[in-house]
Image (cartoon, rainbow, N blue to C red; front, top):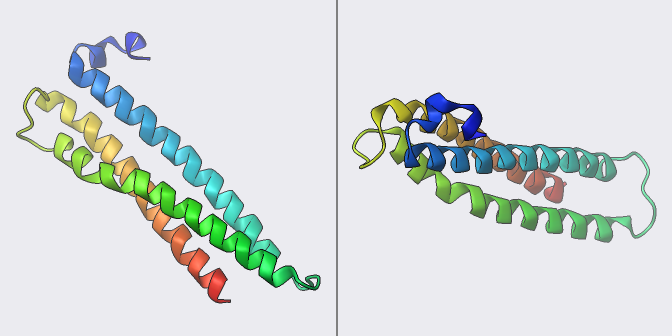
Length: 130
């Protein structure tokens, strides 16, 4: 991908770090979207007007399992916030000031992912309570 963007590649190792970070966070965006779809399916199941006997314990187990998946995802995305914010700011050795906007973009996407994960977790807690 970098070879197709020589203006970014001109930043050397900083460009490689940016490209890897961007690819990882882009993948996280996809995963968060898939989790959102799964949550909507779970909401439909939980709040369906009719449910069969014994469905509530199975549903509670499904909710809990999904909540664990969201927690694991949060553990992957959360710790990246501080380094991405630092790379987007000034004073990091070997990161050119011209490259900071690239890292700012990645940090913004990561913030959106973290907010989406937080929202998923809150909704799952509400569903479990219901």
